[in-house]
Amino acid sequence: MSSSSSSTRLWKYDVFLSFRGPDTRKNIVSHVYSALRNKGIFTFKDDRTLEIGNSIPGELVTAIQTSRFAIVVISENYATSTWCLEELRMIMELQEVDGISVVPIFYGVAPCDVRHQRGSFATAFASLVRLEMAEKFLKWREALTRVANLSGFDSNNWKMIKIIHFLYLFPNATVDDATMVEEVVQHLLDCLFPAHTTDEDVVGMSRHMEGLASLLEMKSEEEIRFVGILGIGVGKTTIAKYLYSRFSRQFPARCFIDDVKKNYKEMGLPYLRKKFLSEILGDEHIRQGSMGAGSQEIKSRFGHQKVFAVLDDVDQVEQLHGLAKDPTWFGSGSRIIIITRDKGLLDNCGVKSV
Image 1: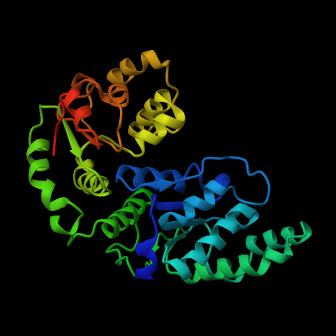
Image 2 (image 1 turned 60 degrees about the horizontal axis):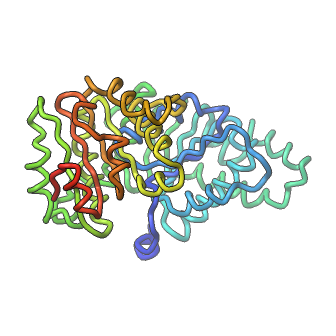
Image 3 (image 1 turned 30 degrees about the horizontal axis):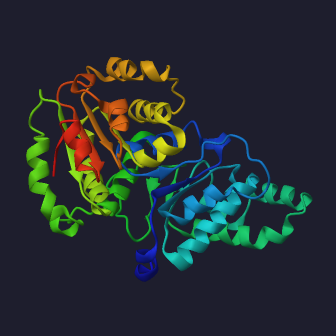
């Protein structure tokens, strides 16, 4: 990985998830995405079920360019999608010139068939010839060959062969799908937040950790605590992600809601509430009632659950009141972390901060 080029890029996502929807959306991709989300790893997953046109949308291009890692789930019909092939071409070009790290998962296909475009991949390319897309063949073939030359996961035996340089070998050769996915995600988490990381290694951590530990008081199982992280700069989110990766797995209900300010401005409070509910419940298609009923819905769903939630970039009281106005909305032992630049907002809501 090129450290110089990587350090100058602005990351928005930790992971870009590339996959062929009809093959994998409801199985392996769903498991991987849920595990990533539950560990606080920011992941871009395109939820469109219909591809329109041969060129991928600009938002997908931007998501690829602003992701640190790419997990590429290659399935039997992956090469029938020109979007998937274009995503892969971009990902592999970025890996070469800008340091994005790529983790391939070969789902129901042999890596050698991907490498040499045999079987279903040969059939897919034959169809593309008839669509007069031969001019892109060489780049797509090269991308498939390169990704297949990376060591990764083969679902035919779920055996760890050898992950690219930043991952370690797994101790168990054969595990079930769910366990395998959890271990893949854990290794990504270890890469994002290395085990040897100290408080001083994280931006601003040395100034805040002592106060945060006191305010969070994780040993208290009965008290519900709201904690604010206050300041200007990127350190606040880094600290919150560190805390989320460290503590969230102790909570059966958890979520990390990023860009609250942006989502509120562009989509409104009902969208934020739906996102909050769907992230914790793990249901992307959840239906929410009217905005007025939103607070009651949150309370009815989580009033008896132990919740760990991070709300990143809150800039208006209405946003906080809409998602977590009152401790009684959550069960005993819950912890809600609010990241903001506005001390007055925290003071008005009675939230202690560091």
